[in-house]
Image 1 (cartoon, helix red, strand yellow):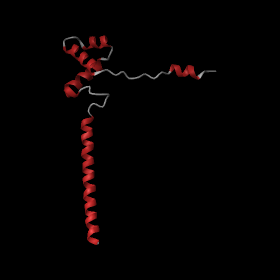
Image 2 (tube, one colour):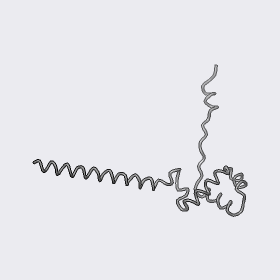
Image 3 (cartoon, rainbow, N blue to C red):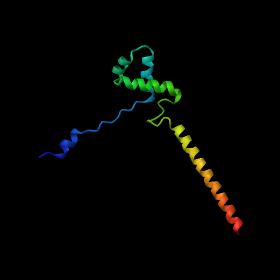
Image 4 (tube, rainbow, N blue to C red):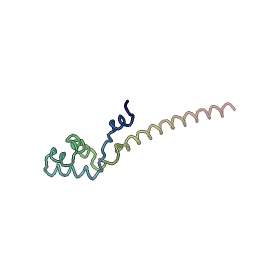
Length: 107
């Protein structure tokens, strides 16, 4: 007979590690100062691919890199959403204006 607690204890869920912006910048600075990326990865216990991704993100986005928890570039998405909303509201206003004109003409 197996106890539920024993089985549940063996299947622990691993949480994804998060790193602050300063940590990422420090790791990148060390690589750019001349240390090998593999050596820095071992020292900081992060994967070589992760460091490559951080370096690429920094090159592409400069000041906006590492802004938040995976939602760093929501400004563009938010602008797009607001532009769609403005378009929809403009169409609704035009429709309501035409409907109002039609109702006024009938009375």
